[in-house]
Length: 444
Image (cartoon, rainbow, N blue to C red; front, side, top):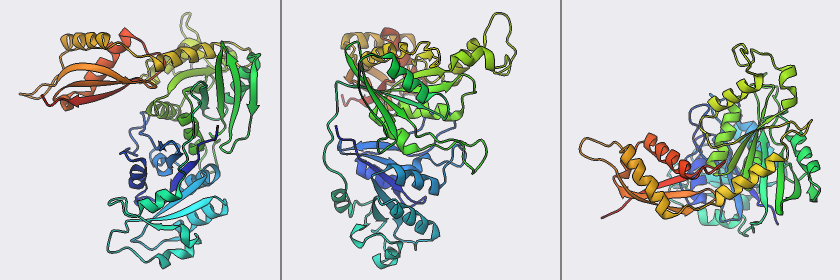
């Protein structure tokens, strides 16, 4: 199977990258940072099953511990992407930062297109003003993300061959910070299986892969080496190769988020979990290095003394439950690659999650749940208007997707939507998989 090409949008802020992203994706995807520790909206999408489109600017937020400068984003893009779209505002003269972006992109010997946005505005500068950046004249394109002008020509330049998908192969990605034990678990998973089909390493996106067979199921494990160690920019700040990690999340069916048992999990762990959920993938929280728990972790590791018969592992699981409270459906697996503890259990969980992702509930069961939810806790509304959910159907799987029909559903509070999700999970747990909802107002 051919690998899906990666097209990365890079450039300074306010050049219109997000608008170009949405127009190429043919849908509106908000690329903004939310509160720390919560989920983030997608900064990636597959376009026409032909290429993976990524807006690198979507991961930059000055309040985040893992902030990346524009130069760091472009360094990651030129290393991991196949095609680079360098976006500039055509109404402004380029500066030294733009020149640096162009130089770095061209030096990587990747295909580079200079996309000059906002060409519909009267202040747009002539193309000659941008040729000094060194991009080939035939690769300089005027576009308007607002009107769509120039996009037909841009789309002609991008990959258009649909990439076939291996539907029968279950793909599991190992995601996590540096030194959490991804490679050790990757090797341990491979050694535990006798039916190793093939192994291939060093792909263009630095994702190591191994293919195995477990209980008749073909499984490909992806070890993401993309998370980078703290750099020189600031001690304690962790950078990560966003594109490789996002590409692995997008490709995988199930993501194992690895958490080091000997180190406090960080907001980066929560953010990675949010990205997995936003992508609609299955998720397992994998606690690594359990063999080191009692020997290397102090009893006050979580800010309180170990009392009674409670162990450090108990406090660890309590902390995970608290900090990942937005993932109550995600199973937690405590492992040790050194001793082999619970390593093969990961495959059992993966099969269960895969079944849950493909499970489709009966419409009659869904509507019974909806009626009981409305009776138990009628949704609140405005003074003279109250939302009235009428019926619900499941329209898709991977992830399971439910559509609620009714009247004035735009008034539904987010807390009631969560209440409905809990009720559905009580009927069928959907272990390890997010579920999505749409709410549609009927005319009659």
